[in-house]
Image 1 (tube, rainbow, N blue to C red):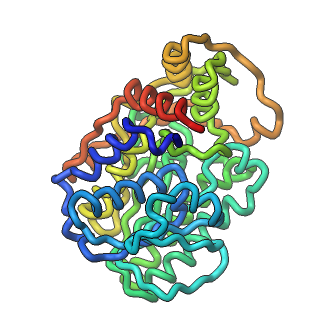
Image 2 (image 1 turned 180 degrees about the vertical axis):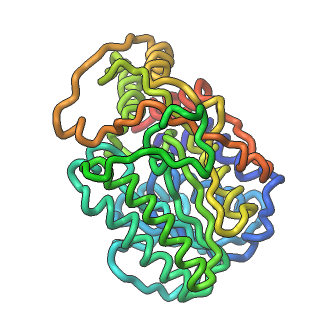
Length: 352
């Protein structure tokens, strides 16, 4: 059994798919194109939309875009022959054309983990700028009703010490003359590009800003600290912490992240950015490690990272996001971090 076939994960997907506070009628009979469709958040979004199709006859056509058709076929085998699903293998950093039009376009494709920042810094930046522009051009060419650009808590930079929670107007410090800056700076630039397309071409755009997300759909290549902790827990190994663990961040279980994305997509105000976060996910890195060690029955140990790995690490030590703006749309979290971590470990333990 794959992690994404786990009954608990499927129940979490169903919870999002059956949220009747969402205006699902906006997606009825429409086509949604998702870049990064095989990724952590993208694949869960596909699951939610296809579940809604099954349970409520939404008739929403889902086009998932990614680079690896083989991996996508394995991931989406249950939908592969469904007429409401299609996977398209393409490189979003290159101009592309598709025979279909899309009513909603969601750009989720991005390098989102430390080793990728350090070993593929150019591609990291280009996907957030050139890949985004190609997706915007596709949306413009087919007259899409709305475009969503997946941004990140990283755009806030370092906490200046003047607030506890970052709201959508906060702007911290980023040293742009570092390798690690490529990801947050290109996300910032991507947001500016979205505003330019909205103003110059009248494109309807919303910007969900994700926190550090996790769940059973995480990719094997993901090198974020939490992803490594989860693999340690699944292997019943000690949790390896590569710092003192005092970093204080917001974390979001993937089902909550997708739920927040749908609220922004279907209820958000055009041109606005929304943090997808919840106070129940605000913990220190050490607390995350200790929670997973408790689940696994192991302990936390400390290790110094090598130079390649540490080059991709965030230098930000405190980054908690306010969810007040998202809550005005009616969104609420269902998975505090203790629940989300347990659901993730249980699902990953069932991997073939």
